[in-house]
Image 1: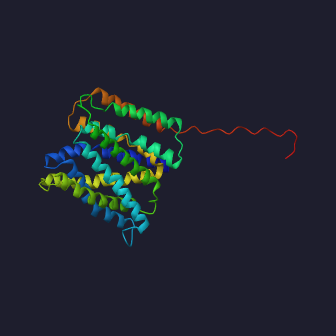
Image 2: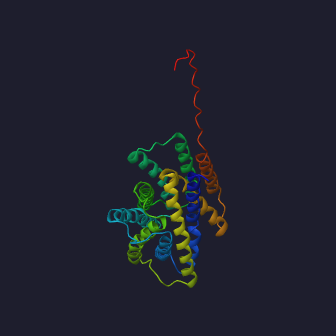
Image 3: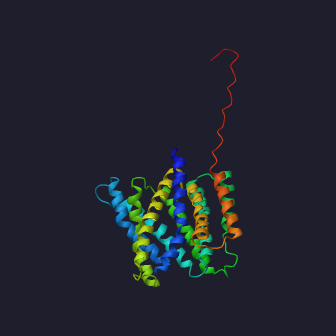
Length: 305
């Protein structure tokens, strides 16, 4: 298996794991929790596991990177992942979560634009076609009876997509090659905890009145989603930010299937069409490039060299 093929599988696997979040959030809510508390607990419980795995992979000495690189990690964890979670979950208070999630998933567009404008990466015709198909597929998930669209909710969801696009682009271009994936994710999770704990206290979402089942689920999600983040980091390193952001659209597809099969939600026509369109776009995107056959060099009839 080539490095690129492995990167494709790592990003798709991470997107599938992320896509199961609605299933876990529903179960966690039954145990007395809420989405903000779940993501806070998830980051907190990942810390000892991530530290152990990083040490086992050979990270010796100080766990913190040099000062210059530490600043980059703080930027990645705060303006990237931490801000994404706060903005997205706050948008749920102003508009339906399904609608917010669809708006949030414009981030592949932001990634492609940022890569082209700031890093001069070329966007070929096939990528543009697949990106267009992907956006059309995502629009099929837009709730038809979601109610009125809140301007503030729309802005928050768009900003969450922009923040996540920053995370993906900076992850690929920020110079994190010297930090192992588990070490990097542990540091990012620590930054997230420092952001989410005060946020959950201010919003009133912080609670410890959870059932033992909810705490166990929080630990499971911490390990499982932590692994997904590690896979995503490895995938970005292998195939780049643009391709990784595009393949991440497997997440809403998985969320739709998890809701239909796991939560007994009704099977609606438009999301089903959207799923097929996204899978089609990913299939086209994954087709190998045609190799150019070199033209034959004409023989030199004169006999001169």
